[in-house]
Length: 266
Image 1 (spheres, rainbow, N blue to C red):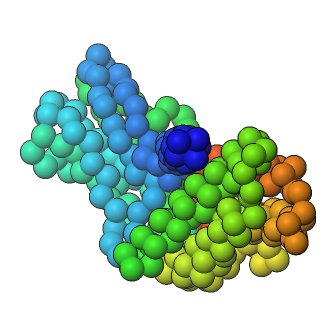
Image 2: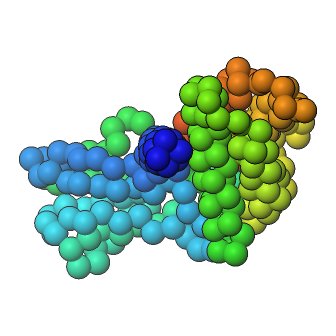
């Protein structure tokens, strides 16, 4: 009964961390409401899309007296903004952002005009959108599931160490094995399909997702070494579990892979 309770608690902690990470990440759609000359407009602006085609920017707004435009430029590039007038399609205004190479980012704003009053949906700050390649489900699904399980076993091992009455050796080894499989087998495949490289973390770059995986793996490797031959390593296991949870709480794709445009940056 006690083990079942600890597994249930580990599941709740893991799911809570996953939801928090998802909702706070830079790839999560930007949602909000804006006032356009007294008209309340609800919007949803994507921040992560695939490179297969130009990205459609759509705002549902039945009022035909409202017109709109999308202005965009390449992220961190000193160049003029491009303005594209939106077209009305039924009860919506639709514009387009040109597709970019893998990792290419655009800054963009949606401008709506009513009664000669022009309003930017996001205010003075533009939305940022990154383009990526398509990842096959046979690669993406195992990666996500295995990394979820790695986090689950990490939390479960931490709870076992905290309780002090349960051996942690098997839980540590399961966590380490799952991190390796999800982060260093399927992870590089996801990175390759998305951004054209297998690894963008240290020593080749500063991709935070790759570096988070590396740090977590090293933490659990240290815990496994500390607990070899049945030694008491509860402090190591608890520390690895807490630090891994902190690492996982960092928004996914923060400081992610980016395409370097061959122009003078800001």
